Length: 459
Image (cartoon, rainbow, N blue to C red; front, side, top):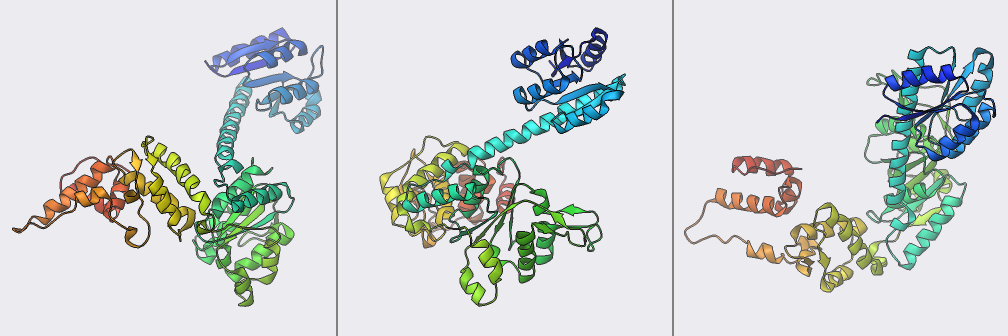
């Protein structure tokens, strides 16, 4: 069945002609000759699009438009009007109608407007679905931990999201989860229905980073073959997350300060000011106070950002969160890797609590992922938790598969083939994970599989 269109018009001939054309286009059709019938249809039927006449015998079309926007906010409404009431139809657009068509109809043009409206509604619905999924994924409940530090961060986030301030500074060591906190701030705020854009300031050379942030005009530099909008422009109404801002060059720091001060900027090679409303969240693991003293970071930019600083402590300072995080990552990763039967032993948890985690939460996640790959039983033990230099003691299965050189020697190719075969078998053919086990690249795994005639594998 196709999408259902509700035709609201008091003239039987118009309803008949519209019904015939819409059904020919593959749509289901429902009809209403007056406002009361239309209201009942809106409340009881599944409607995908409404064709609404401006003049009805019992209610004004504008009033019915308001009803439609309240009851079916995602459903596009196309107004139908005579030439003499086009001004009213334009006003209806301002009140939420998708478009208007004039009587007498050009049926081909009307069919095109209907299809475009349904396509736009489908895209909007897909966007809302994605945003809803992101809200669930990055809501405040996804900040895992019960330590005093995490409770304090949660409280600060609530204050930030209620604040009108558009700048936030996240400070803490690498791997502590500043990027997650930035997303939580966005999706807990009233900007959640707009875009979240992020860039790492050290990932691009200055010229490319400037273009990425501010956009450029056609011909602004050699490779600028067309106009490009920057992150600030694209994310208007939403959030831009600048990671590792402490390493931003002085030139870009100056331009960023202009955005914060005036909420406007110029594209590279442009002359027109572009006004935007974005929340800028910055993150750094640098000592900004020292950077300011060394004139490596602008003092005025530092004070502009330091209005709402959020300090994210290292994992070693909130060890009580380690078991909760470990279980969280186990649940998340084992589901993705189809090992949902796994548990973590108390000894393995104790080993993790004794470790200092220089790589913080990111390192803990990687260790849990590696443990899932290495574990050959239903319970992750201490030997599966590889931390520290050299990853500590080799796991039991690694000791079982250790290769001892026979007195009479052996074929190195056969040894290599056997180790590659074991890695591919243990990871169910996943070349990326097999490469991690063997300490080589994914391309090297593929080459060695071809070399030894070991078929299969993926990812």
